[in-house]
Amino acid sequence: MRFIVTLSCLAIADALCAAQSPQLVWETDGFIGPESIVLDEARGEYYVSNMGTFGKGATPDDGKEQLGHISTVAFADKSLGRIGTEPVCHVDGLEPDGAGGYTVTDWLTGDVLHVTADGETSPIMNLGQGTADHAYLIDEKLLLIPQMMENMLSAWRWLPAE
Image (cartoon, rainbow, N blue to C red):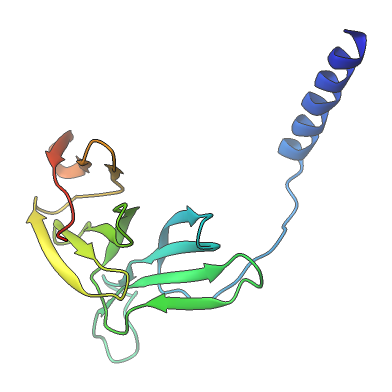
């Protein structure tokens, strides 16, 4: 019993020390407004939503907005990749769909989109500006979407096309 208590106390002490003085483990760049991150242990990758550019002072030199996309970061070597070759939208929220694809939200337009594993997009719905980081409950086939401009949360039954 004493051994277990000692181990628990050491684990708590280690956690407190780590929380008080964070140490950078790794970093990578090459994103365009990274916003959300999803971990996929089965594939050995992180998925990162890229908002793109928008608004005064945030656009490239030519002044045109740049839509975002979904980046991949490999666990093993932190190499950067991308899902698809075409821009998706100003990707804010990002959630796996349970079938190899993703649901994404675009805060600026209010679009909720489905993105396949190879980057093809299709609209799910539009809820107006302010759709943000959302959740998709795969087993319940339920999209939970916060709508910031309306100060509300909505739940929608949805499943990806086969």
